[in-house]
Image: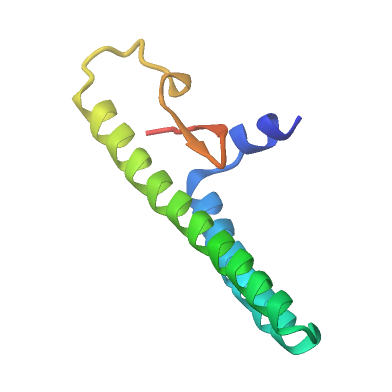
Length: 100
C-alpha cells in the first residue's frame, strides 16, 4: 500500500516532502533538547534526530540525480515504445515512477 502511494506521487513533490521532513526532524531535535532533562538522553536524541535529517536530505539529493538521469535517458530514446514505467527511482526504499 505504501509503495502504491510513493509510485503515484510526483518526484518533485517527494523532494519537497523530504525537505520538510528534514526540517521537521531538526525542529523535533530542538524541542527534545528543551523537554528532556537528562544530558545523556539529550545527546542521544539530538544525534538520532540529526542523523534522521541528514539521511532524508541525502535521499532527496539521490532522488534529484535519479530524476535528472532518467530525463536524460528519455531524451536519448528514439523509440516511441518507451513508457514512464521504464524509469523508476527509489526514495526511502520505495520505487517512484518518473515521467520524463
